[in-house]
Image (cartoon, rainbow over all chains, first blue to last red; front, side, top):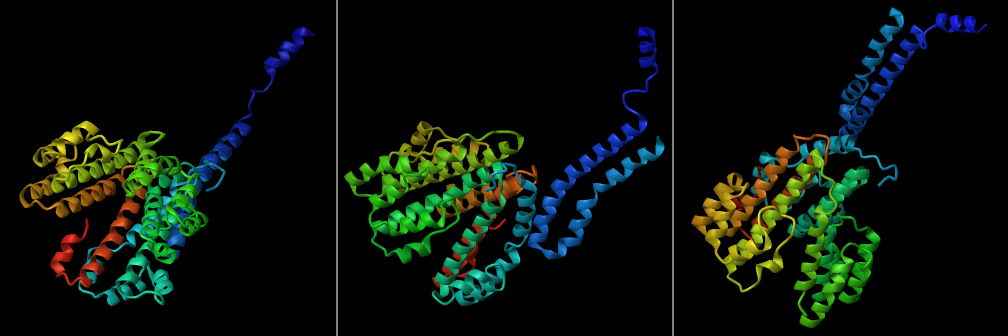
Length: 79
Length: 348
């Protein structure tokens, strides 16, 4: 019975399934993007408060780090 | 100030950069120099100063209107800075803006001393620093200097003023009180400043300001030849002079100039020093000090974009703008020529 248990652990799947690792990767990328957007968003709000015409520029610059998440999403399709 | 404690240099810097680009440039000054007081007021009304000119336009006119509008706008701009900033950034900005608290305390004390009525004193206050409206109103209502000192006991100026009050009672002159206020301000300027890469620059700027202030005081003493101990006016914290060095240098102007020339500011100030040696004119030298400091902070603002330095650079530039407009308005009123006024301006 002990032997059977040992065999069972050896045969078991790795601690992290590939799909779980991919999900983690996307999550971390999103976290990074969020942190980057925090700074850019604060600066963009400051600029827009002074000058309304900067709204479009501010919006574009604020969502630029979002590309990080999109690139990270590629991982999900690779595994 | 929020209690969350986070610092938000991104937001404040973005706003400050926009405000800074809206300051008057060469072009505007060239126009202003040719205008009379009424035209200057109108010109200001069409730019950033609209609200202040409109609010004060019914009570004042001419140069007074310009002066009070400038003071009020300055206070508004700097209050905005303190309102925007959080956490550590607030502390760093407040350190420098306490200069206006010091100014207000001195104005109130002088006002009470000269028995001006409180409306007149109120017009001369610059409500920028850390004091809130309530405290300033209490100060304005103070019937005597003793009461004013009493009402300041909760602030950073309290202990120094209380100690100096006895001196004032003995001598009857304001110098001890004013000295106490200035010293408290400069003592707190560098106190407990946590120095990292970014604030290192800020500290250098503050040190440069103290050095220049010491140099200016020493030159004034040397120029006037008055028998005053320069150590009484020495401000601690600079890197250029020690108290005893300054005391000996203030006796001899040529040595003082040589000492400044050999210091790290020598390059920036060499043109001014040449002029000082030849022309004996302190005004041009003091103006050169202002320009050197302004250039210095202007460069600082680009080294660490997300720190206090762009904000410090804006504060200084705004102060210079206010000084410049005041100089133009006063100069025109006094009938100075355009060239003479131009010499008074501090423009990069």
